Amino acid sequence: MAATPPATRIVHFADLHLDASLAWAGATSAVARQRRQSLRDVLVRIAALAREADADALFCGGDLYEHDRVTRDTAEFLRATFQSLDPLPVYIAPGNHDWYGPESVYARNDWSPNVHVFREPRLVPVPLRAGLTLWGGAHLAPANTDDFLEGFRADGPEAHIALFHGAERSWFSEQGAGKEPHAAFNAEAIEAAGLSHAFLGHYHRPRDAERHTYPGNPDPLAFGEDGLRGAVVARVAADGSVTRERRVVAQTDVHDLVLDVGGCGSSQEIRDRLQGLAGGRSGIARLTVGGELAPEVDLREDDLRHVLLGTFDAVQVRLGDLRSGYDLAAIREEHTVRGAFVGDVLDSDLPEDEQRRVLIAGLRALDGRDDLDVL
Image: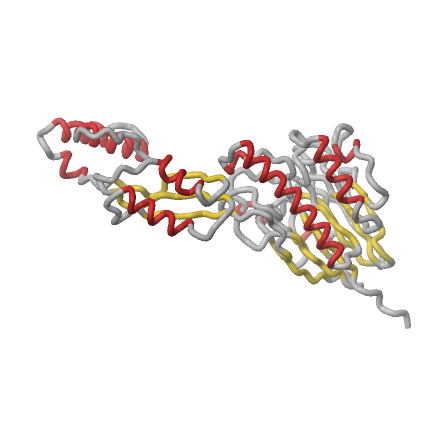
């Protein structure tokens, strides 16, 4: 009786987005450069993980870099990093951000023999080992790539797995704004196509489904991301069944902080509360300010930003449910300039947040105050 072949060990990642603009971080050019270096450091960590896991292959599910922003320096970094893994095979399925074309890094780089870049807009086979075939495909443009599984069938007695960049339709609505359904497919089509599993890229939220895996972006690319993202160490058994283990490889911590200013009688109390909230953290932070702001408190966005920049590399400050501490209903009933002003603003067509800013600034001015910059 023939011996059962050992499981094939794969390290899979996607959506690193090297050379991304990082405008979301609100960072200075120096900090953005630091963040872009952090993304490179993540790829180095993924390569080290492939060695440590004694992997048989490294998979990349696309969006490895940003086509419109990628530099020659990054192209050389990629070439050298993957060459350092030789003879470990590296399989790359270009996505909608790093699409394959004659001017792409994929076409122009002098890759080492261990690097295989899929170059067809359809799934094509590559043998991984006896009894196991990998099928991979590529985006050849930044949009309008068809479903890789439509009309596809992997026949034969061996096990078949796939690597591509695409949007599983049933999960698309959970991805949030800004995500497009590139190369959209149905999850049930994986088994129908004769594939035991699909290793994917595109969704930045991680997911371990029965027959497909989204590793998620390995290092933070936006605020509000959730789930255990990183690289996936997978073992593919002789029958094509897959077991997975997630490894965190992120270089940067991203924090969503919520500051309630209710009950604070001075800006110093707010600063103290914020310092306690930020203490012991590092990386990048987004602060959401809410609560009822006492009328006498001089709260300014720059002051909050200054506190946070003592701890974090870059910050964003935004408004949540921040409410005025003025009794607007009572003031409106006054037969005074204040009352008329409040009534006019409340009856205006200004958006609610703009109304709040105008009311606070105006009431402060009428009180003879000069702290008119309103958060």
